[in-house]
Structures are given as structure tokens and as C-alpha cells.
Length: 625
Image (tube, rainbow, N blue to C red; front, side, top):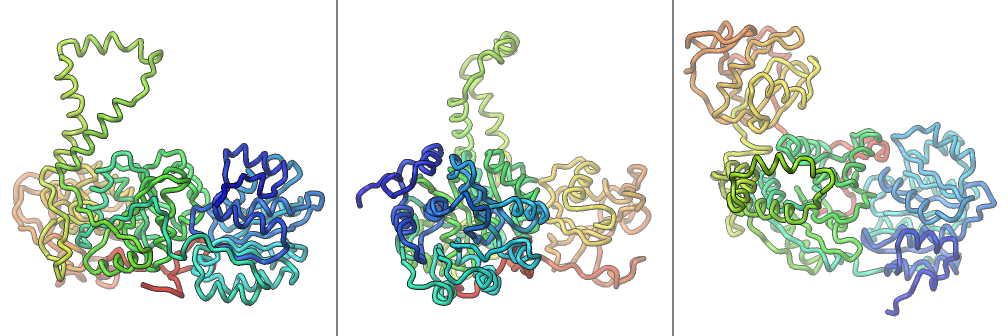
């Protein structure tokens, strides 16, 4: 196909200046096909193209050209499924309209002040970019009049339906003129999207760029086969083997994404979570850090990640495979943008091998099975990554010059070869110590079931022994505060603690078995906000304990310091094993201390009634595995 410039597509000079300022030189296939059609014909259009193919410019540029900036009312409406995508579309349109001084666009979405949005609308806007929930709020308040809207754009239509917006879309479209043009853009064409096109569009132009399930040719698809309980350990090794990684880690639920991010942060990684329970300010802060690359790993749900437009993402990591085949395409499309290459990684167990085979058939691509690196391979990757970083570092000659004489003096007795060995050992020794006895996490695909042997570690590090603590959220504790309390009082590093579950008046914590005595002696009997902290080992199999521990020991500690002597662990300042028979014998009574329930990490969250207001995760209604 002949390569066309934006000028040849029929765009006017003001818009072309905006495109040029952004550095765009050549339209993408969807832009090349859609823009001339939308500029020259007043018709409905269906555009099918994968994430990252430039759909925003495909509808945004002709939209701008059709706007009459002398008229100060909403002439076009763009609907998007999430706040992030809503803001991204608005930002792109503003950039395209850089040389259109009279033009105005507003983004309306949940989580931001509706009064501020109403004030902006009253001043006069030409294009409204909105999430369905907030838009309906504005319609019901009579704060937004859509009766003069000429064009409605449904962006990521499949995802809006996936999130349960069918009735909202029906209501919104019923408030727009019948003579409007509707432009529908989607990555896939399920029957619900077809129903919208049938009910609300007349003889639409249909454009399809690439095959329905075709992925980008420059994405490498890889999977690692591990036991389900080793998933987090596998994630850490994958990350450690790629020192320059800049990735999005996808989880199924908000809870899982938060827990994975918390464990990564605790283990020293530059990571944070993005999900629907964050406030808009928190989401903006997380995305700002990720765009600035001060975050290396963004842990996100499918819904929250819609609208993320960050360049140079090197890897997409599926911590769990999505429930829908289409979502895999949306995930992998976050990497390999603008012609660059990328890697889509899936961490799976034996039960999920069939899903990989389905994806291979759907995408007509072979997924490469790789082995989780062993400790030596991780250390080698980290060492060479450090050497590469040193080799490429830019020296600030002016700022470092005053310190050089002292540095040279300090290192004068060390020759070049010895200096290099010592320098790289600083980083190498740390990883070598951690991975020295690292178990093999790989599983043989020919196995019929997962073996119960292998790594004793679980989510976030050593699974260890489960302990009960008599303080909880009503004492002002959250996971972070409890972890800091444990570390400060015991003198131990955060890495020895595993899963933390905070209840109202008590908590459960996994502790590395060989550090259990130290932690319990240090914590038991302390005062926290006026309450004595009691610590007990729990036998609860539901709690994920690490087996029994004997009653021997050198004593315990009360709030004033260590007690001398051995003695029993059942009274005074000591601690004892918590058995099923004595669970109800505490001063709170059995009803106040329910049996602990475990979190498997694979459940789904309950969706909110208005997905865009909280960004809740919902399961697709139209295509399951």
C-alpha cells in the first residue's frame, strides 16, 4: 500500500501543525483508512483495530476538523470505559488542537469534582470526553445538553460492554439526536457490539485493520510453568533476570494487584499498584511516577490499565491469565508500540496449559516455553546489568571533581583489577546470598499434576509459620504499619515476614521459621497504643501455617524487657501454641475471634454498580475461556 502523509489525507493546516509538533510523520493503517472516510462522508463508521494502533487520532483528527469553533456548545461526544482512557483521549485531542486557540474540550469522569466539570461545561465546550457513569449524572442534573451533538464516538466499545455499560450506553444515545453520526471503535466485535451497531447505526462503513485476534508481529509470547504457590517467586526471578525491565504486571483482581505490589515494594522493587479502589489523586500520582520511569513495575488490573499510553514498555507480565481471550490482546498491546519490540510473559500452572494452546490457535502464533532462571543465572544477569550501567553512565565532571582527590587517596592501595572485583561484588554478593540455595521452580509439562514437593516458600517470600497477634485495624494498624512495627521491635528485615492479614481486633502474620523465636520474644507483651500485644502460634490449617514448633526456648519478653530463664510459654509474659480447642477461651470470647479464612489470590472482586466511579473489575459476559 502506498505510504501517505497526513496532509494527503485532507486535514487542514492548523491540525497539521499540531500533528507536526507531536512528531508524527506517517499515519498508521487505521488512520490512513478512517480519516479520509470520516472527513468526506457524513456516515456512521465501525473501526476494528487492536490497542496501540492509533485509534484516538483516527477519530480525533477528523472530529476536530468538523467542529465549528464559533459555536460554543457540545458538538461531539466521546465515550470511554475508564477514567484513564478518558483523560488520555482528552490530552491527545488537546495536543492535536494546539494551533486552534478557540477550541475547548472537557473530560468528565467519576472521582473528580462534578462541580468543577459543570463550571467548565457552562463556559462552553466543543467536545465532551466522558465515562458513562459521570455523563449520566450530568444528564440527570440537566447540566449537559446533548441535543445538538452531531457526532458520538464509542471508543473501546467492547470493553464498555465488558464492564456492564450496555444500559448506560442505551440511555446516553437516547439523549442524542437521531440524525447524529456514530463512530464505533473496538478491538473486537462480539455480538453485543454488533447489537449496538444494528440498533444505533445506519449503513455504517466497516474498517478492519488486521485479523480479529491478530497480535503485533513484534511481540514475543513466552510462558513459564510453575506451581501455583511459586507464582510470586517466579515473578521476582523473571524481573531479577532483566535488570532494565520496564513492565506492567497484570492481575485479575484489585486485591491481588494490591498484594502483589505490596510484596514487591517490601522486597525492594520500584513497584506500585493501579486499580479501581484508588482515589483519582492516588491514580494520577502512580501513573505520573510510572511515566517518569521512577517506577519499574506497574501492577494493574485489566480495567485500570485501559487508557495507559506509556512508551517503551519492555514487558507485559500476566501474573494470572485473564478470564477472557480478548483481554490477553489488550494486555500484550501495551508493549511493542510504535514499531518497537516487546515481550508478553505468562506465569502459569499445569491447569492453565490448555489456555496457552487456545491462545496459540487464536493468534496463530507459537508461544515459547522458557524455564524460570536458577540462582546462578539471576546473579549473572544482575552482574552484567551492573557492568553495563557502569559502562554507559554519564560522568558529571564538574560536580564530582572536588571529591576525586579524596576518592583517589582512599583507593590508592587497590589496583585496577582488585577495584573492579570489589565494586561488582557489592551488588553480586547481595544476589548471591539470596539465591545461593534457591530451589528449582520449574514444572515438567508432562506431569499430570503438580507435585507437593519443591519450594517451601510462598507469596512474597518464606511462607513460614502463622502467628496470631492481638492487635488489628481498630488499633490504627494497616499492613504497612504492622510490618514497620514488627521490623522496628524485632530488629528483623521485612523479607522474613510473609502474608499479613489485618482483622478488626487481631491480625495474622507469616514468619520465617528460623526467625520465629526472635520475633515472638521481641513482640509479645509490648504495649501498642495502650493495649498489650499477645502473640501466639496458630495451628489453623486454613491460615497457611508452616507446621508445628516445640515448646522449648530460653524465655520470653514482656513490655519492659527480656525475662530470664527458660520456663513455660503458657503464662505471664510467655507465648503458647493456639489450638482449635482453646480458640474460644480468650477474654474476647469465641464469637469475637472468627476462624481465619485464607485468600487464594485467584478470586474475583464484587463489581460496583457504577464501574467508572470506582474502576471495578468485572467479568466479560460474552466470551470465556
